[in-house]
Image (cartoon, rainbow, N blue to C red; front, side):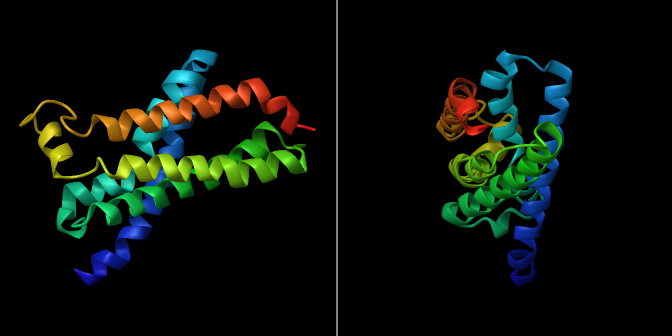
Amino acid sequence: MVKWQIFAPFTVIAGGVLGVLGAIFQEILYGSILVAFVGGPMIEEVMKPAGVYLILAFKSSVLKKRIYTALLAGLGGLSFGVVENLIYLNLYYPEHSHNLAVFRYTVGLGMHTITSFIVGFGINERLLQSVRGEIPFLKGNWKFFVIPMIIHSAFNIAMVIFGDRLMI
């Protein structure tokens, strides 16, 4: 069990990095303003804790406490955010301002970490029961997925409205 407690954060970090691939795929496939406000937040919030889902599926005994699961999910969000920032600042805006970099590595990383932390409270045995069809989909856990999606969507909307001020 102890080795899984040590191995779990590395699995979660890798899952967060892989979550970026899902986000990139959806952006390439469906790149539009609607995706930025609706699809992106939905896909990213589901993908960021991919490593936690793997642990739940294969070694759920590691996830005894909800706070531990939420912390692992937050770590997945943090790793996702770091990779997203590297791509965003080096490929999309290679001549970005210092203000944009600071914003993305503070507020942006905070948003990804906090929303994933919230999702982590919904990653539990009930989620497995829901996936297996034993209970209705996301019964009792829906708020842990929907609220982060709304927060993320509001963040993206604010970035579209006020983001030009960060480019200076």
